[in-house]
Length: 132
Image 1 (tube, rainbow, N blue to C red):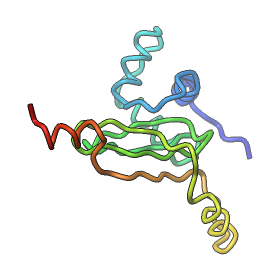
Image 2: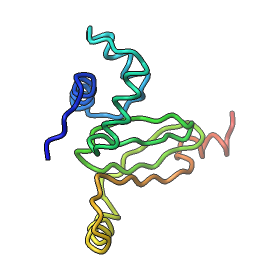
Image 3: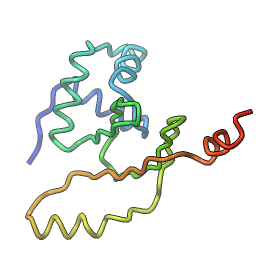
Image 4: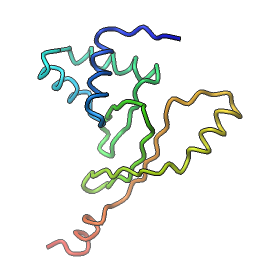
């Protein structure tokens, strides 16, 4: 089934595909203005919500509560430091088999999944031990 998207949704989706990283709605707003494709911030949020419900983009909430958006081309997994906010990507997906099993057992189409571990990175651990 072909999804009919608005021009704003297409522009935002193309931006996310070109960046190949997760960014916030405010950063999308700024980036679109810099590319002479200005959209209102409310329009950005509406377009992101529609793309999320369609399964075209993934939303991830950082430890500071900020949401970041990226394409759902692949699932992403992270180790996130609660102290400095650094987020380290994990390449291996430890729950891929579970996703397939859940799709089959519940007749549920999974668009994407997220897996995030929260803790403290090695640099922040050293700072805690030696706050000099």
